[in-house]
Image 1 (cartoon, rainbow, N blue to C red):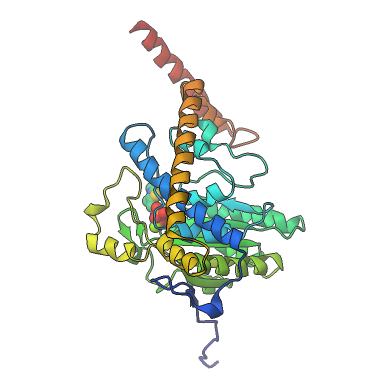
Image 2: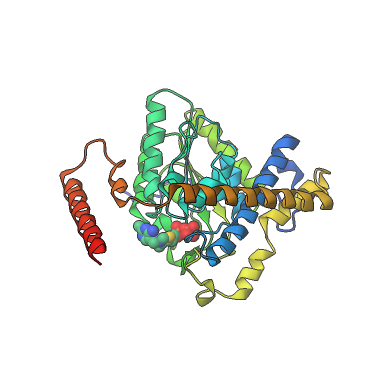
Length: 371
Ligand SMILES: Cc1ncc(C[n+]2csc(CCOP(=O)(O)OP(=O)(O)O)c2C)c(N)n1
Ligand SMILES: [Mg+2]
């Protein structure tokens, strides 16, 4: 009974196509049509400008809190852009640009960020789940969706997003394990933005990379420069081909950085240094991509300004429409509606809670009448 070494795959690639200064590795450049390259650019700018507008609306008390995505545009748009309409996108809460790409409107996001249920409704056919605030919970939903696709014999796939913090949750491990065992066509995209609110990446795992967790679960894994849209797109395209052809799931770690606060309720200055942030500002995914598009002759300085101005005007119109719609609806929330959509048949515990809330609301309303 000797003690022997077991051979296991032990390496993970890191992919970078546009370096930190926006210089291109020609050999790795994905051949993408010009109109797609420009649509990606416009959507990244839309995400960036919408973030700035939402921040200002929040500070004026015109929306509730929201999670900014500035700095992470490439990390989630590149992967989402490889999806077909019939695939499913399962977001966490920091994938605004991917959601806009998929057809969610600015109005819908503003309504949701103001607590209006209508904003959280996904249009049928959009094949996108609403955002998931309980960290990591969406991972198992995506595996279920992907498994169902396989069961039905389609070549569609599900793509799920989550953060570095979510990799410490059981849901991540359960989901990735099951996907591996059943060869579910799912792409796991981790936006490793180095922070889970105030908890640094070093406190989530002792592993050198998040991508290497794929090895333990017997699936493909890759780490990419998440601030390089060509790399995030290329890695996801490879993973999609694998999933569609029966090759099973892939874990993609997009290394990126959250340049703003966790949500508007957070002050990042309390746990990270200005120097750290400034180092990442120099690696801005949007500036890198602009440099690439300019070098290709697809974008000029004048167009950078005119595209940004047109997008700001579109956002202003959408804000007006959203505010009109909220006035029209009036009171944002009927608390009772939260019980409506989770189960086809309501569990007795939940029924008990529903009845209790209804009684309490009735009581509060009576007190209101009296007082
Ligand atoms: C199960 C659960 N625990 C805690 C929270 C509070 N919370 C919200 S976001 C967050 C950090 C998530 O970090 P990460 O997964 O890295 O995503 P990021 O916010 O960086 O995009 C925490 C702890 C929550 N929403 N759900
Ligand atoms: Mg994080």
